[in-house]
Length: 298
Image (tube, rainbow, N blue to C red):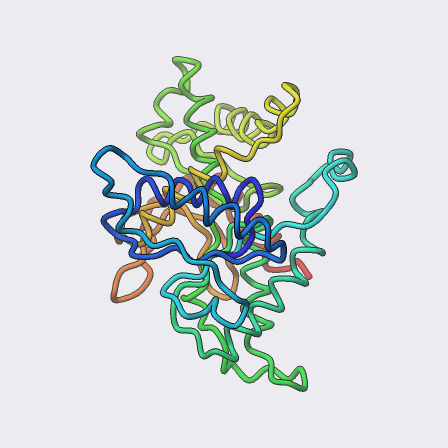
């Protein structure tokens, strides 16, 4: 995993605690060597009384070693929060800086003939997945040759937290509690997000209200004076990555007809399985608008 900031460090802590049955080693890389040293020290000292976590080796990596793995996790984020907090959509504001970095690592993945999962946790995940796909499939002259990452290798992890937030807000009122069992989240972690209160009995008014609450949830944490990184790191990161490894249903952005878009899916040995749903026409039209928004982004 690369990027050992707040999200990356919390995500790794979750994997160390919960990944014993699935993970044999965690590789650490960051441009800041002290961060690598810190998490090597600290993660190796997270142990329960039976010390089962010691089966997961925590390893410091050089850049040349990061693609010797089954799953590469991109958690790098650049940008000045003090500036970004004044931008309407912070996530889109992060794209320019993060895109340059992910392009570099996508090219490294190509050069190393990487065949594992290229997991993107940094925002905006859907757009960065597309960037990784495009850049990895360019030759040294910038020509697209499709000799890089396959689209099904690339997955974006940002929708899990939006579903978790929607569940939280839905549980606050009797009129929306049904979302927890009947609802779905679709689209990006930001502008274009759609929270559907129910797949079987879709209510546009309730859904729009849940969508608004979910999209603005970070403001509630900001108002306390803290950065909202714990829930994204665990709900979108740790728990969704482990669900992927275990072939379980989860929320992530995957390649759908030429565009990366978030939805409930699972990755099987045979390939990606998407939910097949009988959708309300109003909801379907909203999904088409979000898909168009993502596909047209340059």
